[in-house]
Length: 252
Image 1: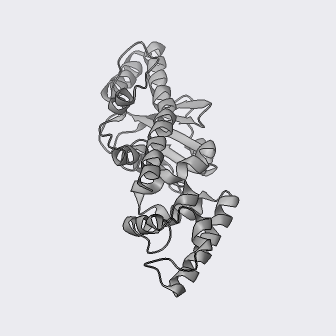
Image 2: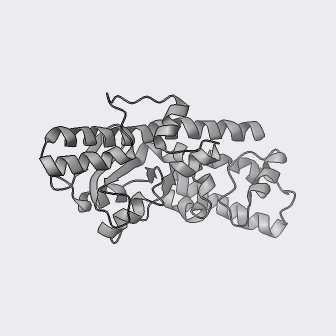
């Protein structure tokens, strides 16, 4: 998808990208092959050719940061990174002891799309490990992480890795899907393996009951709930990004 996109180029808006596509220029190679592009001066065309050449090198070098620097102010199109970097993505979700900003982290779930690690406060939660895993990722995927997970983790990890971040809440909104994680799962027909219908507030209650009683069953249920969250991030990303790709292809 990236090689069909021009939105990361300096000064190219959504309308500008559509103008390029309307001229039958549907890839970077098409752009190179054109001597003139309507709406772009010859001098600017030379500059953009050079930028596309740099993008080719970045993609060949698996450098997701190149595109992150150019797209992080355009969060609505960050999903275009996913098809190219999903195999080296990290999916992350945290649980806390409450909804207020001062609440501490109880669980951090991390997955590479195949295996999951559930880190629990007082047992195996090490924010140094979280930082190390995230720093090696080409893409960090969360749901509402821009407003919740990442700001909270920055309290514990001062030098939180500046890796490309894909917030699935924003991606879902771009695809016309609103609501929380569980609501979007239902809309997409993504099922959970848990025997109980647990919501975000219930995760807080489970931690409190575990802390008060020491009963591991509460903790096990909380860990399973968090793991389902993390696993379903990839399922949602796969479906929603594919929908957006299809929508782009139709418009082209």
